[in-house]
Amino acid sequence: MQPFALNYARPAVESQSTVPYVYDTGLQLNVLFDGRVAARDLALLREVGTTTSTAGSKTHFDD
Image 1 (cartoon, rainbow, N blue to C red):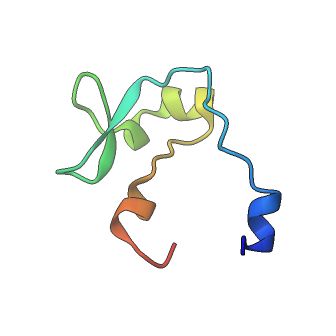
Image 2: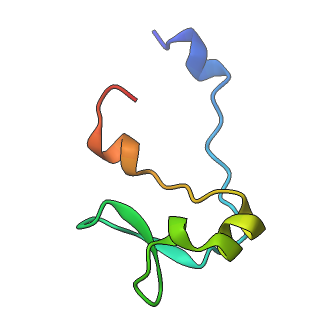
């Protein structure tokens, strides 16, 4: 028997945009390619509104 919700679940759509930062597992922060913390780059935050990652879902089981 298949759970009801799986009848309506859809795979996540991959974003076509690229972001100028990556997730650093050691720091547990998004960092720019030059090594600076992405959340401290005010120009970047004005442009994209926020920096997001999947860090919470990788480190916390209750998300």
